[in-house]
Length: 108
Image (cartoon, rainbow, N blue to C red):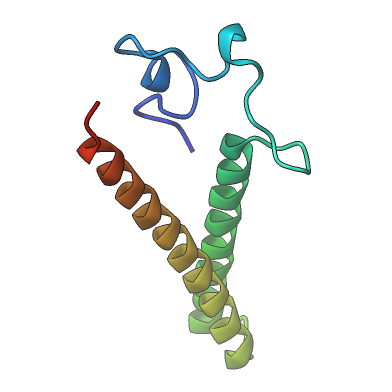
């Protein structure tokens, strides 16, 4: 998935408008969790996983419709997994938007 606004990496986003980029030497290295992943890496891997689950669910439904598959339970499970992954990403997005709105309301 591409980063159209440049918030995750590249030349735009956090480094624009006079704000220093967090990965510049003045701020040190980008923060990493215990496994060594940055937030960007973790987010992108979760997006890829949600996309993979959605593709599997679509394939399962198509196989059921064309008769190549007979296990309705497996199709329901695949679609439920994809739905859960999407809902988790949507909840993360909503929390990030709430945090952004809260930061916008701060006065210096």
